[in-house]
Amino acid sequence: MENKMFDKGFENRKKVLGAGHVERSWAAADDFNRPIQKLVTEYCWGEVWGDEAIPHKIRSMLNIAMLSVMNRGHELKLHVRGALRNGVTTDEIQAILMQVAIYGGVPASLEAFRIASEAIKAHEAEGAAAAGD
Image (cartoon, rainbow, N blue to C red; front, side, top):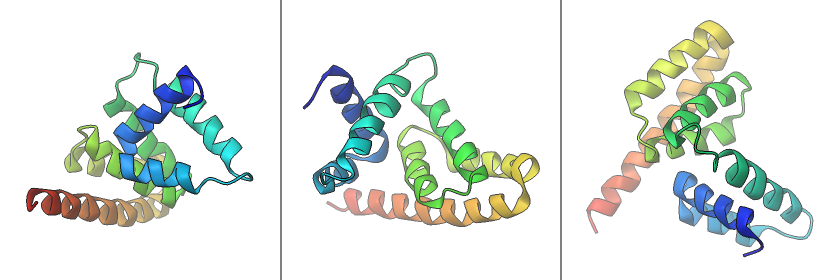
């Protein structure tokens, strides 16, 4: 890869979001969007997610709350699946989204519940398919 921080970020990103997704995303990067992919990989996933002061499970929980309040559905779906990979339970996700309703607004929470439900079902289906192999 490119450098130590990129490598660290690429590994963190694969661990949380899934290797297939990350590798497809990087392979699909072109001259226009490759710089932002590199920036996100190095600084978001290398520097921030690489800081061990907060465990990945807690970072995932924070992201679910923040992305829900910001109404960032695409990213929320990715991070719900990542949270499940990081050991966040569906009960914890439900509790986070209930708190979003109080502090971020009911419409944001309702949308986040819809997106999280889809992500949980997809994660469970992926697990069932892997178990059937």
